[in-house]
Image (cartoon, rainbow, N blue to C red; front, side, top):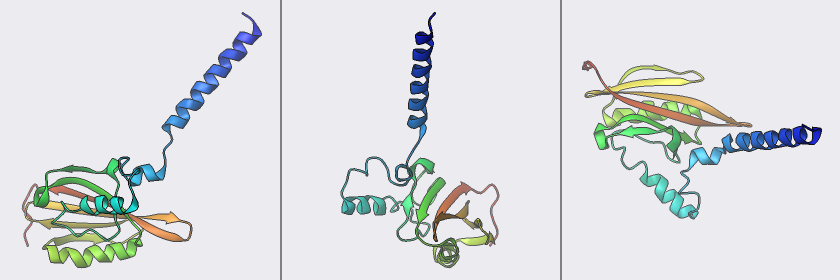
Length: 161
């Protein structure tokens, strides 16, 4: 075979590789707002995002939170849901930690343990469920925001109050 054929074959492989790599890349916005929301007006987006937290009647959600749909897995509804809720928030992690420590008492959650650190962890129980809240910083230059992962699971043994 001639040299032109090998050059053409290498060129095709290079193009195919580049297409594959670019198809695997993603944008931060894609993880923050569902794709169906991207084409809506700002007021419509805010209403959809607010409504997405309406089902969580048993826990407080910090204002201006955005659900990360791709990392969220929910089963059940209202006070019987289990799974993982992942949200981002423009509040600093230390203030998010304080928010949950103060507000969860109003929802009758009982604190089991908490660790305040770079990645903070709060663990609570209520009735037959255990909730773990993991708060991590997101660094954007000089500002910090938070990623909040709330994991809700059934309790194997009843927690005494």
